[in-house]
Length: 119
Image (cartoon, rainbow, N blue to C red; front, side, top):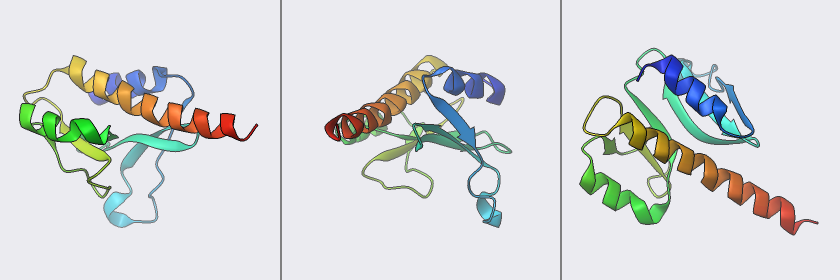
């Protein structure tokens, strides 16, 4: 999978926007982040495109790390809720997309339940 395929996949998910939010930080100016309803669910370095960092169900993190060498510590995010996934390692593009879609879903549902409880 290349960066354009992955970007198109992320943007195909419901209510997704993208931006490069860390331009003020020299070490993170090339980070592209994907958001659903204003909350980040995935981000990556567009110059390296070697891995992405996604939100993950905390219950699944240890199992994913045990199953795949490609799954590791997130870049600059909470170890409890985020993982990084190396592209072109021992994990299929299909599985990366599935996990990214799940990340989107976690944020989307959390945001939806907050909005629903305010009515």
